[in-house]
Image 1 (cartoon, one colour):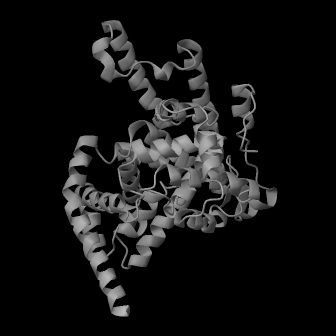
Image 2 (cartoon, one colour; image 1 turned 90 degrees about the horizontal axis):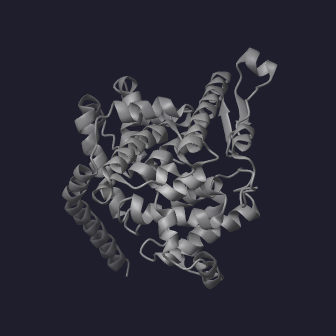
Image 3 (cartoon, one colour; image 1 turned 90 degrees about the vertical axis):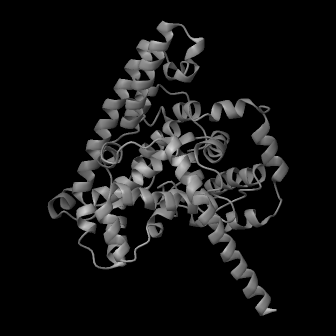
Length: 395
């Protein structure tokens, strides 16, 4: 089902992939909780209002698809791959103007969402995955998969442990075929980058990549470009030092962008890492509905890791008034979890994330990360010393 992709007419495929959800008459009348599968096979549970929101979202997807088809018809199938602005010195003036126009158009389009049927090729091209794949022999992934088959490491053991816990109940991922495909991608990457190996959280990311990209090889290269180019270093290494740095940077951003809320949460002794660690490690794939997650990833693969901060801040911003009324840490967690699980309309989140959180520049975030790194490394070193001391005492 998800392993291959036939050559169907793209516009027809887009239409067929977005059915209208129709709960039963009894459900509509009683406003009962209903269950249904979304576009990517995940079971969604919500009330009839949620169903109506999802139908509105699917209509937006259709409209957005028409915009992309029109652009492809007028500019060419790969118009978004024209020379980047950074290469402008080598371009004629007219081409520079064209590149600027395309860049502005593309950014706006991507923030409004890439049509599901176009996601695989647009992600693969714009993320740098295609370029990364082109630097190695064509048989690289198949050769790697064969070379590591049957090998047992700490990473492969953890992967085997996590496979059945990755989106249980999904009609393809939670099958022997789905487990085997996901295992090959994760094990393959664990041997490609021994510093990362495997970290819990990557199973959810790779699983969603498999559903979108359709083929193992493309999902593998998307995972590679994500870990090696899009995200910051050391997010998934053994001590998760990069992730700890991101949490500190996010806490500072929350203090700057939402000072009242940050002060209130600090008074409650609420640490943002209680929710944000999973957000950043799983790239929201365990927290947000699948289409909302993928809308976040649309922008992530084009604009980079700063998108995670925008989205995390957006979630807090959306519920700021309600969070200010809380009295317990548990209440904060419940509000945030309930909110993320029911953000069925991606535009509700992304509008706040990009219009109400201010500008974030990659260079500024890099400086903030460097500022936080010494404290994080000192804390991790102290933790390691404590652990070694306990081991010595046990002997």
